[in-house]
Structure formats: C-alpha cells, structure tokens
Length: 140
Ligand SMILES: [Zn+2]
Image (cartoon, rainbow, N blue to C red; front, top):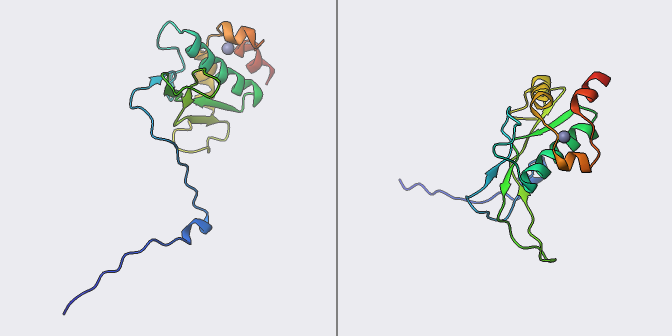
C-alpha cells in the first residue's frame, strides 16, 4: 500500500488571531543596554546608552509608573537613514507591568521597583526634564 502525503500552507489561519511581526535581518552584533531585571548601564554610558536609559525613564513617567521597558538591546552600527544620520533599532524588549500580565518576563511590580531602584538619571533625562523616579514613586 502506498501512502501519499500532501503538504500545503493554510492561508486562512491568519484570520484566527495570529499575527506575525517581521523585521529585516539584522547584524548578530548588538549592544545590551538593560537586562530583564537589571537596569544599570553596563558601561560608562555614552550618548546612545544615556538616550536608551532616558527612553526607559520616559516610558515609566508616561505610564505613571504602570509600565517599565526592560531588556533593551539594539544594533549600534545601524543602517544609515535617509537623512544620513545613524539610528538605533531596539529589538526583543520586555515589559514589567503592575498587573504582571504583559507576557514572558514580566516581573510585575517587583520588576517596576527594580527599575526605580536601578535607574540613575543622566544628561538626557535632565534635558528631557524627567524628574527623579523616587519622587514619582512617593506620589503614587
Ligand atoms: Zn532618568
């Protein structure tokens, strides 16, 4: 008896709630700015690192301390944009939320508290007029 296997791609599955996020192939060389639970700059900073850490601070401020971006990493030697300036693509971030239900790696309020304890404001935070995180926590 001969068995026949038939292979096909079901193109209807995407209507059932599955979403694909596709990005261009990136370099395997990247810089890790923060970890999942560690938010201290890994080096002396620099403009890019300070900007990423200020971005994390901004997100915390913008969400009234309800969300923290973690595991921020990206390709520093990024492609050249149309205006001739380098840009950084952050990929594979994680979040910590008050509810602790944003996905894999969400450490909930403990993750948020870890960010508040670790973050040290830098020049970019100051330029953005972001207030100290300790003050924000006392307000909530
Ligand atoms: Zn800051």
